[in-house]
Length: 410
Image (cartoon, rainbow, N blue to C red; front, side, top):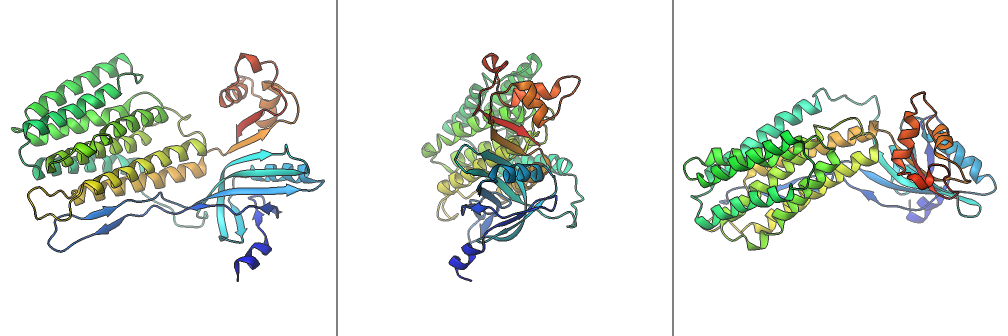
């Protein structure tokens, strides 16, 4: 079938409640899965691991209902979308897919049309095999294993650190500590982080005598931000800042030990990001699918940047004394850890609340809108949730103007 014939067939969306809709559509992009490519070369130690993409397939959605009944149809579609069961989307370009919407934005400000845009994730059906392993238990175990593997690899594969290399490792710890200075901590957390910083400094100075102990101290210090009593999003912001600080100096890395220091330190930051996802502060951390996917995207992008960076540091072969090739077990273990974490985040996103965005058609207020989209409770919790989700300040407490974009979750 030619692309012209495909386009002419149109799009059919069967929502979870069994209703079918045939809107106009705009052809949109999809994001392909998360894969790791490994290359082994004769007589060369290690494995070349190429950068990867994110797990799962995500599709942008852009459809239009038009005509004199477009408001009625879009209202019916919005009600159908609240059903938590998956959609079956027959798409002219992408085929027949089982999808879950992550976010939908309704725009009926145009004449005679309602435009709906958002994002969908391909999902397996409930009849598919169930995963028996507990994701959190498996991830906690893998975090510990990967951390130990990286510490041992560094301690055994590096030669004795020169004075300059010791300064680099110690300077990295100082940089990471500075990046965390303004991150919210309790008094106990601040004291513990300070103690870990002092311990890692002492261990680095004594690296030659106890290299493995020094790298375990590095691991513990870099890992600690993942345990802070702040949101996962806040931890990710701090850890991504730390990763960027380390990456900013890769152009100045010359010796194999220099490069091994970056390989280890930056990888530990990514392990800390994974560990953060296993320690949410509360239910609000992964309350909605958009927030969960944002965390998955940041983790995927950071790991991809790491792979590009160590690839740029790698030499042509491992035969020369000054050559550098990343440690296979460390990098492949990290790749598997990240892949599993992202797959778990996608599963969480599929079960989390979905985002809806609308432009209100007339002046209203928080109480009426909370009642409309959530229903009211005796403790006013739905009103508080509505106000929080929409960043409503004093100027909008009494009146929310017509045309204001409203966010709610179903």
